Each structure stands twice: as C-alpha cells, then as structure tokens.
Image (tube, rainbow, N blue to C red; front, side, top):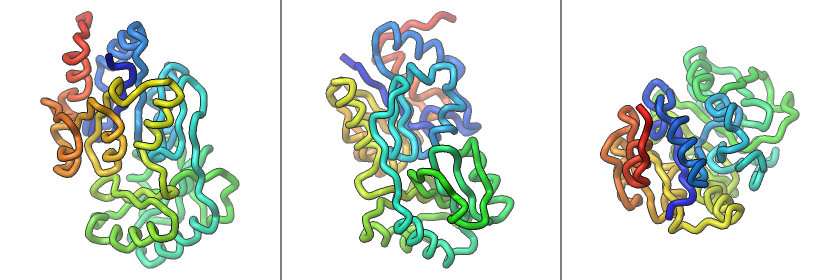
Length: 267
C-alpha cells in the first residue's frame, strides 16, 4: 500500500509554464482522506515552493534546495547548511565564468550577485524572494545551496570545472540544461526522502516517486514505485522502475497517481 508520494516540480509536476495541474487540490484532498502523504522535492528554495502550496503548507511535505532542507507537516526534519569556506571556494571558480549568474540560497531569501538582466530574469523564475547584493559579506543568513545559471549550457561548458569541487566536500549536480546546484556532499533528494521515510515510519515499498532530471536519481532509488517522466532524461529512465505514459505538459504525475491508486475525480 502506498503511504508516501514524492514528486519533483519543474519538468515533472509542473507544466512548461510552471503551473500546477488544475486537478491537483482535488487529488491532494483525496490522498489526505486515505492518509497518504504527498511531498514535493525540488532544487527550488523553500519560499518558492511555498508560493504554490501556502494554503496546505502544514499538510504537505517540502524537500527544497535539492534535499538540504526538509519539512513535513510544518516540522523541519533535516537541514544541511554550507560553511563560508566552501562558499568562497565556489565564488572563486565563479569569477572565471563571467557569463554565469550565481545565487546563494538561504532560509530567508536567495541572494544574487551582479549578473546580466537575462540571467537575473531566469533566477527570478525559480526563486520567489531574490535579494540583489554586491558582496557575499552582506549576507546574514543560513545558506543551504548555491545555484548557477549558465546561458551557454551547463553540461559541456561550466559543469566540468565546478564538478571538481566534489573533491572538496561539496555535491555538484546538473539540475537542468542551464543549471548547476551545489550543496554539501551527502545532500541529495534521496537522503531527504529517507529522512521523511524515517520520520513517518514508511518503507521504500510504500513509497512512490516521480522525477525527470539528474538531481532526481537518488530519490528514485529510495522507492519501489519509482517513475521517470515520459519527458525525462535517458539516464533517469534507466534508473526508474517505470516510465509515465504522459509527460509533464499532460499531467503525467496526476494521471499515474489516479490510475495506480484507483482514484475517482468529481468532474
């Protein structure tokens, strides 16, 4: 019996316009009636996720910053912040790539260092509260993640350089075509799902997970019912046990939940 459902946001639960399916709240309410927990897992900041789920923030689970901050039913169950030494290491590399935007994702806001108008616009799409700063020393906040936007394309341009930080105790992840996310080593969505499972006393056999990109791999491995989206990267489909019949623009997540859990919606 499924007791926990975890879904990535962008490219998975949300459509290309970053919108929730219109049936989401009806499905969520029916899951609540069955005592099935629902959690969103994203590289986004917590405040960005809260924008979508403010009315149900104490009933839903949040995995934000790629697993660096985890909350369920209003209770924080896991968090991992980056120390200043590691932040300065990332900033030193960033200075070699003038095209890249860099955001420092904290508890209170995402702090954006000077960048181009286009890059700033892209960061604002995924981060609800963005504060423009001139220097890292201006920040008085806990930093969970550093996110980089590469307009050229991260995989073959900047990622090979930043991935070397994995030797320094940091986790460097491709989270999109243009995005690199950096957290502490050991932080990922899989660790976060495991923290939720322990908190709720739920096993992998009782867990269903949906994802589409490389930062979803670890959490897919934490669930027996792991689904790659129809639009997922090939590597993600190789790891997942199943592939959804529909993509994110055609409600692939909700349609799978409705079918597998035999949910009847009121039209």
